[in-house]
Length: 461
Ligand SMILES: Nc1nc2c(ncn2[C@@H]2O[C@H](COP(=O)(O)OP(=O)(O)OP(=O)(O)O)[C@@H](O)[C@H]2O)c(=O)[nH]1
Ligand SMILES: [Mg+2]
Image 1 (spheres, rainbow, N blue to C red):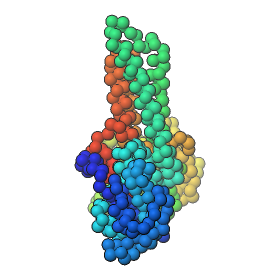
Image 2: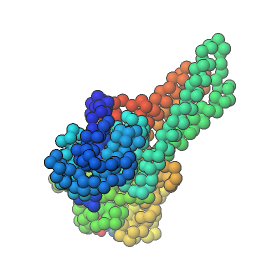
Image 3: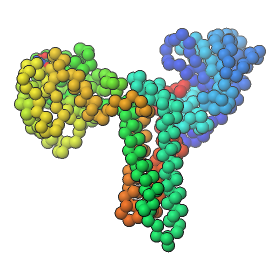
Image 4: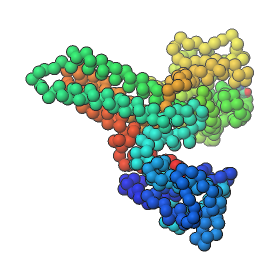
């Protein structure tokens, strides 16, 4: 999207606001600076539209033939979602009839809205800040009730209010420090001022806590990708089936059964998990299996966490490096999140994995389901999930990176102060940190980024 589009706010836009397909009703939304031509053109002249009150009406085409009958609702500016005049037409929910009404609007001068354009106008007219506009999209896309609740919290402005609070605290500290450095001859010792020092340290620890909460929100929104990897016949496909509760993958006693990459989605405590089953890792002359193994390694490389499945017949007192040297050959110092799963525990009930190495390891049986609850806990724990139902707000990766950068800058600023009493450097770090946070609410966001964000919304939003 080009930046001038973001400013192009005067024309009237129209879109079907309800989901595509058939339904009891379908809603068409119009937004613009003046909708009188649409009201008379569609509804006729004798309709007494009272603001925000549903009015039963017929929707007419150019020859006064009735296209549909339904409700018309007008929201005069500025008291509307977009801040402009908005007209909603609730007709019958068939794609053909809704299209005919949209076409009539276009005939009368409107144009089809771009994806996210209603939300974009709401943002440009200060009806929502950027984090709230994103929360609208996140609420619609939410894949669990927890994710939906956290999106509502962001939509209500809790997230934005916290951001603004941090920005205000940064400004207050900057004002103080900048005022003090205007008097260089006084040689002020900033750290000796306990009020300033306490404020700074509290800002740092609050930012760290805030980052943790935002990470939880991002986890609920984006979920994680887990890859099942291991030697042939270890029981990867059996585990995929057991975890997803579906007979998704073929399981046989033939080593090398799985060749393709298989994906299943499940939800664990509201967190969407993409679980990927892969071909057993081994060297082979079979061309098809070779391709499967090479695809398996590609998935392993991209995973948020790896479930390394081992047949429990293997010595369970080995470290991960002994069990899976190929991984460490490929990724020296391998820093991915790996859980070792000793499967087929039903065959070896006396043995248990050795956790002396400080690694994440668990014994399970895909066959009997034994140990799967423990495995699920271990997965959640290893991706940093905390069971805090309250206070989580939906957050995106862009928010995390902005909060992370702001936190780093504040830490750096404090170091400058501690090392060399450098007030100017602290003030500069705070100024930049504040800018990063303001990007979240959209106060300092480039038009290009705004374009990218809004164009990822769906039409009619
Ligand atoms: N006793 C027992 N057998 C199991 C268990 N899990 C899997 N098996 C058996 O082990 C064999 C291999 O299982 P799969 O799930 O196909 O193993 P895989 O790791 O996907 O194998 P490949 O696709 O060939 O790499 C099958 O005969 C399964 O029935 C378990 O927990 N206990
Ligand atoms: Mg398999």
